[in-house]
Length: 404
Image 1 (cartoon, one colour):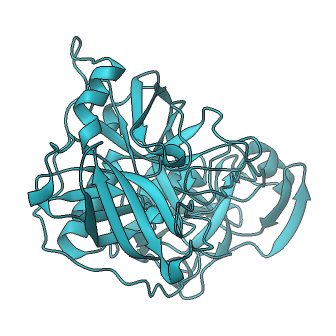
Image 2: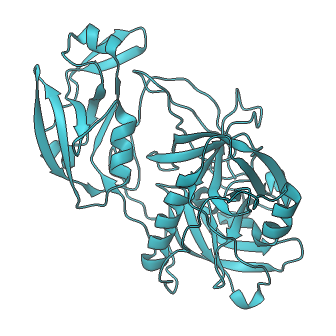
Image 3: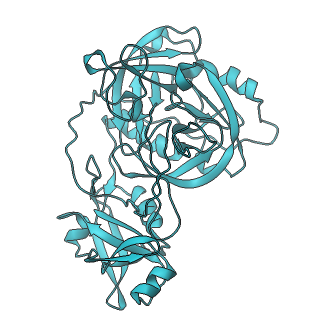
């Protein structure tokens, strides 16, 4: 589980959540939208590949009327498959990274859960980041088992572990389809906040299609917001629907100043987790598309100040040199203008449609790119010099870190 989070607001219009992932998010209001990619960096962190599993578990349908369980019944059903995870850090001391909450003896602690009968466990990437060894305990009476890292994806904050299946008594959790959730649906979180194992909290789905920042600075889309209490140590644990099935992996919370949970938590949805974990199980890693731009929302007010002929879209602020957008000839802003919303880098292209679909802001561009694969073509309609034109580019491989 982690501390030190931040919230970043789009400098043009509606806010989205960003920052470092984990149990804490400190609300810091800025005006910069981190888009679908920035500068490349080398990621030398070792990943140990395991024997591949054909695919991640299939997603289940929504909770049928009459199938809802009480919180106690959900805990009885799912609790044995929820893991207490301890990741030992190098040198016998907890790492300085903000992505780990120190436990005893120089370890970071978090949560996870069993997804199949082969000993496969999901958690957050930041829970096991930089660890030399990982141990897992399933349920209250389970043995502490050595875990091997199958792979970790810092772009979605998902990690896959493997333990000896012969030493597990618990039944794996069922994975439900997070895209079927509605705001107001009941949810339950099970995890180990502050090292208090097998803690249950309840709440509802407070919002959908939120955006948060992954540990490497890129954006995770379609995130679930919940008011179920999530604190340091809950990271990597399951967010469960009313039938006790996993709909998300708890990852972050927002606070009003680092004082702890205030009822705004975020979980990476199973629609993302299922895809990423399947790729990790197959190849040891997950691939993500990359366009190489950074920007924010264009609002009618900003459009008026810039004397543009459009009133919404995604204004390109910066472009990664030699990235897909750069090679396609897209233009970044060249001058900075100060507005009531802060400083805006102006003069760049405005993306008004992606693959034929109108976009209202950078969030729409990010969501589309997150649904693509490297090598896919992307058709953009951009506004430049008083008119629109079409640009087709080939998406690249996302670098390991987003900078700038």
